[in-house]
Figure 1 (cartoon, rainbow, N blue to C red):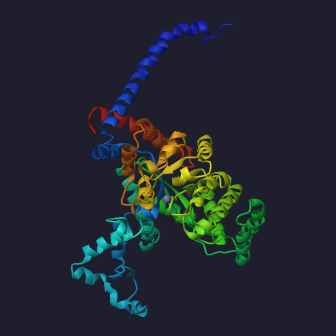
Figure 2 (tube, rainbow, N blue to C red):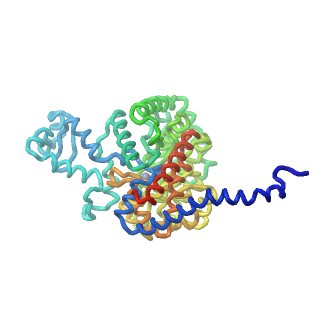
Figure 3 (spheres, helix red, strand yellow):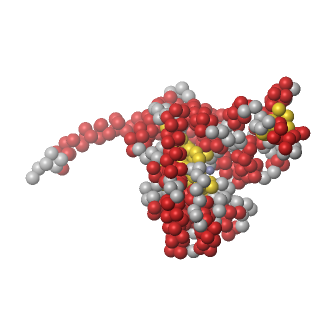
Length: 493
Ligand SMILES: [Zn+2]
């Protein structure tokens, strides 16, 4: 029997097919070669690389913390509107009347903002504040860089949802300027005052079982969940979802330029019962709100409680995954290096996040080379498509890990999906472009084609829930990169 696609008939079509393919593919191949050549020419010139990446569509930024991404100048303007009193030595500030400050006993050092303005000292104060709230002008004699970085968060003024909206708009505007199509922001934990009725008893049980497996932990976690459900814990999530939706629609509605989605998170510094309660809230929010793509775990990984409860936290994530199997989670794991913690503490954090917790993405993963059987772990991450979120400038500032110390080449060698992200560009006085400049300058083994893959990874491995939205952002990034490459090759950059 002869079909329209029989061998004989297909043979007639072959020359035409080859002609069509040659016509269609040749310009794209030529363009790839020309872009590769151009990129290698500018690789060692930071100014040219900055101009190049400033214009290049960069897909998504999947690892950035809202509070650390807004620049200090925005926080400063907010503080000025509140008309504070400043302690001119510590740079602490108070919104209270001087009468209330007097009661605290340190009033002599406090000066009212209007008096600072009258004396012409406002600009000096602002500079000192920006230095305290970020890495601006930091020098090593200021103290350990990781302490300076993490302390910065504690100085930032916290506003309400309206100020969150203003911050979101700033990040969206900046993303548009930088040609970033998508932001996945770690926004907030879910505030809620509810605790289990027998919190002390649960605390003891969790501490007792923390190094056991889920068989022993499960009944305890089941009881806590049951208790919290009886107290209507998830009403807190409903309130949060309603407010987030309205702030999103008012300040950063979806459009063709930049789309924003959110991760909610838990703080790894809290004790086990509080941590688990917050984790349930975070998973419920990610389950019930289309704008929340998933969950993360934050705070310094080398802190005492973080280190003590690390494995317990991993079991709790695994438990929540069974309760909410469709919720995705990225986990800060392995943001550690030799000297910061004991050597044996460098051997299992990424392993546990991947193998026990079942993380969908890993944030930082800096200690990979120290992990037990890192080759097997890297192969697993490759085989199961667990991407690594690489934050080059953050790792350099906080951990002093850069150049060949950084494991990015290990991830690349094992074809683990890589995405490039910023972490806290406001506090780190950086941006998305800067990350790509560092990447290109430091790692000649990473080609222009690799960088394009990383960019598309940042959309493909995002936690966007709506299929159409994800496809639209990818199509926009692809079209943008095509136009960008044409402009580069015409010398119009
Ligand atoms: Zn981070």
